[in-house]
Image (tube, rainbow, N blue to C red; front, side, top):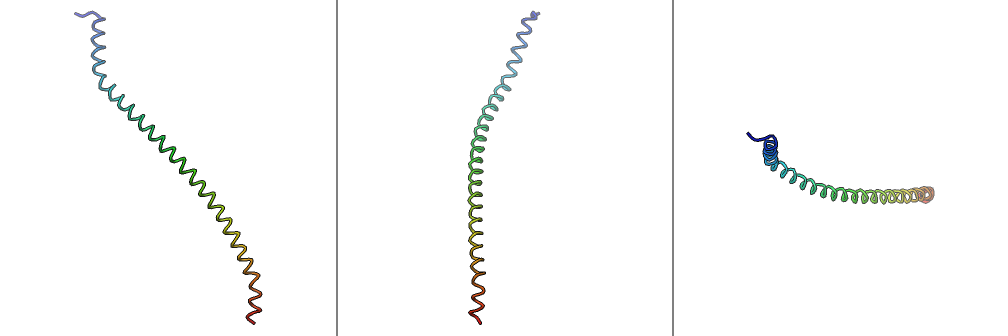
Length: 91
């Protein structure tokens, strides 16, 4: 009958052999997760660039709206000034 140490060593060896496929799969999963982390980092960087561009477009859009409404105000003021003169010319 094997001694306790021999028995423990045999059990340890068996367990290690049984765990090899599990360890290999875990290693593969770690590699895949690393690749996914890299891809996610690239996506996040792209998203930040898109958000910055959208913010720039929004700022430009606000400036354009302000300029358009200023010009419309000038046009309305000009039309108000022209209306009394048109009535005189028609009579």
